[in-house]
Image (cartoon, rainbow, N blue to C red; front, side, top):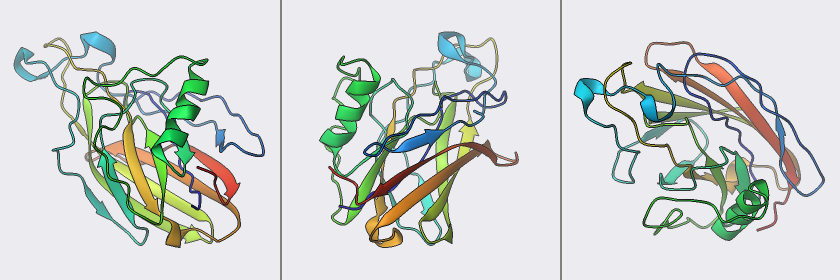
Length: 216
């Protein structure tokens, strides 16, 4: 399976903060990026009318557009770390996440990490938590292929909270599959991620790169 690479950064939607970077020959390399912060973060995030905002579920529709085939497989992954993580299989992603947690098993929603996700053939997998809590839900993903081995994914987010009313659930990582046909057969690939709430200008939230092919 070929690799893909993508980035993401946790953060809630307004303030900008950098992420640390890391690289090696076998692991996708992330570079620092500002994160987009929302109107509220953590368990005190406000929700409309004092009704708690639940975490996104696999039943929520997310539209996808652009020249690169992107499939939203599941919204019920680990709560930490934010990612992004790239691999050829779900076990490969979870192994990277365990490494990011110092060897500890990731905490996921009750059903389990990406339970029941069906991975299409000929794809690489990306795990990313779009925001720290459910005040931001992903509505649309737009792909842009700027050149060979360079892909951009724009996440359109919907802000659901207002300060001082109720609370929002933690946001789990979403699982995306990207068609390998969009990636070069060898060499390197880089994916940039941008995000914005409705009506706002897209802002970079980071990027990741890796050598191909990507191992499972």
